[in-house]
Image 1 (tube, helix red, strand yellow):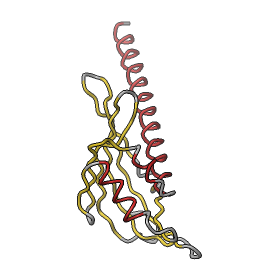
Image 2: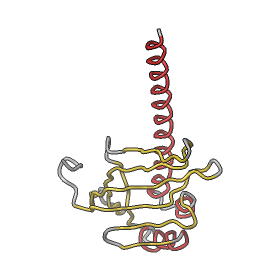
Image 3: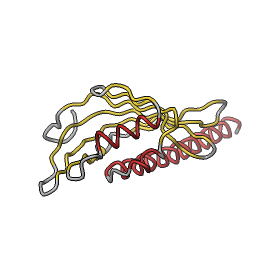
Length: 166
């Protein structure tokens, strides 16, 4: 009987942990999709609302951008200054992974990693695949609000025929 109760307790804890991880994953993926929706619309004000003031963005081709005002400026000048051409981001299906970050058993953050494809959208032309890249985002929870603190954008390459790496 004691063994049965121990196994039941372990199963309940595992189920609770799985539910917590599923809820965290759903929350982080939703936050990510809201950010990229703003990105795809070039809504730089809304994009900026997803980052901490001291955000650190590291891009393997563009170098580092430190601080929220510098990042929003980069978005505004480099990505959203041309009204007839802009980028669109699409996540690579099945590539997302979410990892909880805990201190004393409480979740304080999460790491989101995955791959995404960027398309060039030019007025009057079909979307053109521009490249594929990997990303890692550190999301922090502060007073009930999730914001990105660190962004790594790396391993940029041409898009393979199947749309994802093997």
